Length: 117
Image (cartoon, rainbow, N blue to C red; front, top):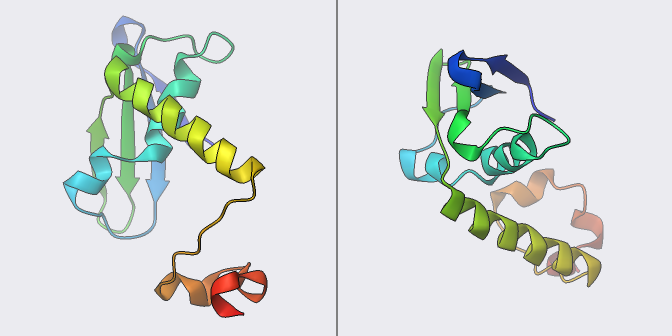
């Protein structure tokens, strides 16, 4: 669910996602699948129908009151679409390899996870 969409000049839009945690490093930010999916959705004719070049993507970190804005390119969107198709295929095959880590303590699926059985 997109938090906020602002109309900008020249028929551009800015998609803003508010974050309560700390800002990750720039490399992780640039690869954000979440923002890429928002850009794909906003470029679709049934939503905002904007070209990727007219969509700004922003994470707004409330803790530090810091705004990080970026754009995506058409080439990046091809890879994002492939990643989405791959993930959907894995979901349909119920192919979930556990990735054990500190997040496991908060996981709702821990009691059925093969890593904990």
